[in-house]
Image (cartoon, rainbow, N blue to C red; front, side, top):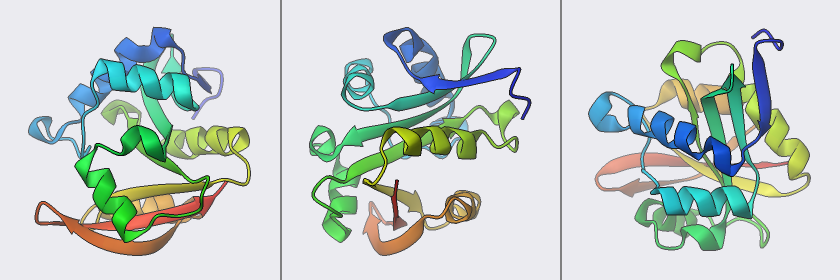
Length: 166
């Protein structure tokens, strides 16, 4: 990753279109692996509530990493299942989704966005889920220091719950 080409920053409302476009292009029906799609209003609330980190190249969003309060996700079934399997600390938050444009993968963007998020939320626990069959994502997150703390099944699909302390 060439740092002169890519900006890692906290998202603003101006990034919503880019985040939503990248989210749409990475849904399962388009060959992606995201497990949930957030509507504009929900994503805007997440950007306003906690740090959402974006990677931009030439002003265009090429990656994003969401953090959000547990309470903002209490109506999302897969997150309910995640938190039933492992609820975490009292000030824990949901890490994810994380998404990188297919043409930008393999350049360390996930690690760079994660490092930026950790700086903004030191000492707090992040909780995430990953499909058990998504070996690439599980490997990437393990290399970033996350550990599997539980497993669950939702909609007939097996997931791992991971945790880390910022």
